[in-house]
Every structure is written in C-alpha cells, then in structure tokens.
Image (cartoon, rainbow, N blue to C red; front, top):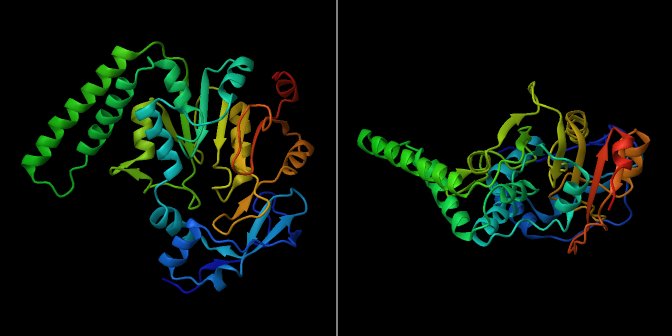
Length: 338
C-alpha cells in the first residue's frame, strides 16, 4: 500500500466553494473507529492529527482537510468497517424483538401528513423507515419475524456454491428452493396488505458500506431486497419509476463524495425528502464532512425549502443529530402540520 494516505480537499465537498475557514476548536479525541483505522492502516496519531476541521463559508458544512484519498476510504468502508454494524443491529433487533429503529414519532407524523404509496431510501436499507413499512404490511408476530429471518438468511446462503463439488452444488440448489418456498409461504400466511412500493438507491461510493456489508455471508442489499420486497436501483442510471412520495436519506448523506448531487437527485425524484444526519460541531476524523444546522439556511436560499423536525418528533438524542424535511415545492412544505 502507498505511504500516501491523505489528499487535499480544498473545495467544499457540498457546494464547491474554496472559502473554507479553519475552526478554532479542533478535536483531538480518538474513538473506536479511529483506533481500528490507525492499527489496520499502520497510521500514527500524529499523522491523523494533520487533518484539520474547516467550515465552508458559503453552505456552512464542516469538512476535514486533508483527509483520506478514495482508495483508502474504500479500504475503510470495505475491509476495516465493511459491515455497517448499526444497520444490521437495527434489522436483527427488529426481527428478534419486533423493535423498529428509534425515530421518535417520525413515521406517524409523515403518514399523518403525506399519502405514501412510493417510498425510497439511499444506500443503507435498515437505518430509516423500511422496517416500519414492513411491519405495517404483516402481522406483528415475533414467531413470524424470527422465522422469516432464518429462512431468508438460509435461502441466500444456500445460493453460495463456490468451492463445492457437483453433488453439494445440487444439494445447495434443493435447499435454496426449500428455504425460498418457506419464506414465500410465511409471507403469504402473515400478509395483511401490501401498502407501498419500496426502492433502495445506491451510488457505489467508497465513502459508504457496500460489497462487504455482510451478516452470515449475506449482503445487506441482497437481504433487504429479499426480505422487504424492494427494488434496488443505481442513481447513476436512468430509472423509470413513478414520482416518489418520500425519499429517505438516513445517516447516508455524509457517506457519499457527491452529497449535492444525491440530495438534488432525491428532490427531483420525490415530493419530499427526509434527511437524518449528524450535526457534530467537533467533526471527528473518520468522517470527511458533517452537516450543520446553519446548512438549512443555505438550502432555503437555494429554494430548497426545509422543515426542521429535530425537536418535534419526541426523540431523546444521545448525540448531536438532526432531522429535516425538504422539498423544491414550498407549498408542500407549508402543508406539514405537527
């Protein structure tokens, strides 16, 4: 591996401005992620500390500069932290205990205000409201959740036949059919009503969990597609789908090198976009950038109209975070009532 691990990010990753001002307060804290990155990449604390936090004077996001070059960020999100622990914890917690991710009353508020028939999320399938919609479509039975978890994992695992001889490949094929039939039968038996069309968009960014986001050798996107009956689509290819009602970006806007492109893509595809993100005033070194609360003012100036939901959804926050709804249609935002 090359000794060069950093590159300069002299322009704002969101708006492209060169007006970046170094923050007076710089975080020197380490954490679980940084310790693993330093060890696996053989990088010293002194080297990591060369990266400083800057604030864009135009859109107000925070950005580390210099920061890891793309080949290194790919290694971080493929090898060192290839598995998105929080996302997998969410879905396993749901399927084992029936608990959806904690978003306060967000799901109820959105359904009260918006007739949702077409819904999408970006990059990570288990951070947002996908499990809430799944829960609304099937009977709330712990036995169903546990059995559908086992049969779905077994089905996808049994389709992995590399290194097996002909006999065991045929055996795997028979097992796959059995597990798939069990999953289909379980869903038919417990189905209440299919409420919405669900989509997961991805951009293959080296800033996000991708090919190695696995549990029991099963990838998160494959598992989500099979479990949640959703379509997986590439933002970089033409997608002929109906206008979406809501597009969710849950802790993934800061996990792409093209956040402006992704947000505008979502806004063009959907009536509303809901964003859930860190607003860390002391940006830590494992992140290239972070949104700030001032960022909403910038969006409004660009005629992307926002509604800050952070303190309106009844959620207790252990970390600095923010929820906001946005749209290019001001009338739609003005219709939202809490």
